[in-house]
Length: 107
Image 1 (spheres, helix red, strand yellow):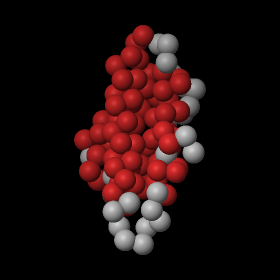
Image 2: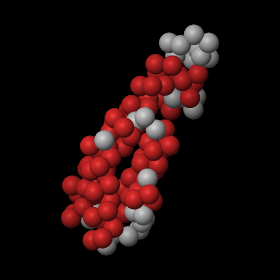
Image 3: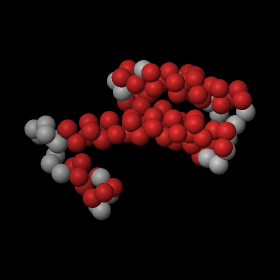
């Protein structure tokens, strides 16, 4: 997490891009470990969604941007699956996830 905190938003220098790429590579390779920590998932998604804005429109960063998108989607998809699975747990308020879903029209 410490290295991820060092990735500066708005900074497209070679040093910052190198750091963003390498941290992303580590997080991607260790995805199962990342998913064990809600804090790390939240921090990673926030960091890389923020960086997507910086990397948009720069042709040299298209490959990195695609990796960032795929990484964030994979983490978010896993969290949605977890929420959907909670509906099957007794005593979990029924319909709670459906009412919070942006697709439901209620959230």
